[in-house]
Amino acid sequence: MRMSERLEIVIKNLTRCVSLLIGILISCGIFLTRCTHPYCPEEDEVINIFHLMLKPGPEGKDAISMPDKFGKNFGDTSVLTFMYEDDSGLSKGNGFIEFDLDQLPSNSKLKRAVLKLFIDTYDSTFRKIPLSDIIQSHGWSARAVIQPWGEQVSIYGNEPLTSGALKIQFPANDSSFSCSIDVTPLIAKELERPANYYGFIIVPPYDQTKYMFNYCSSDHPDQSLHPELIIDYE
Image (cartoon, rainbow, N blue to C red; front, side):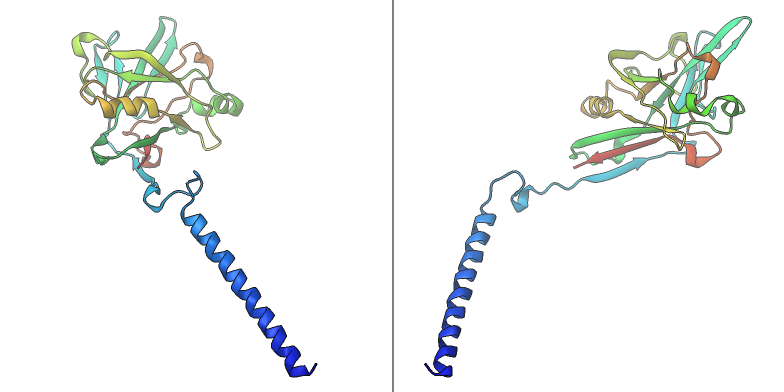
């Protein structure tokens, strides 16, 4: 067999192989476009997740409520809660905080909401607390507020009403002296029934007075330490 004939046979075989390979690729392409497996979603099923961070300044709404001792709320303090113990006993005030959720599109679907609070590292008490006690702190909690409230007003000399149906325990603080609390269930309730929910109450562990730090409010002079509400939605 001459060289030219052999070359012609090789070319024909290669052509057949290429045609077969193209056919396989086309078949695979058709299969993939028709795939209904969860990991192969249709183009119109692609989910876009958006990110919104609320971090207001002094215009933000937060206050310490001390109706028993002073008969009012304090909305211009640099911290969220109050606790002081002396010979006369323990003076305490829970924190209240509410974010303006109007920036969230009305047709959005909530995926996750995280409240991020920052420890007041400027406080002289903070410098006396062992680092391990700050990082491993536990006992702080948040609940839903179910009554309108104002930064400087205490309704009938009482703390704003709260719901005990859902109590969220704070996780440990991280190495940047902040705490990220998953408040998705509380924000979901507020979005579903805005006329019935008004932010959160922040309750510190009053049984841990020895090593008591505090979280900053939106009135703290260091803006980087203001509370944040981070919302993921679609």
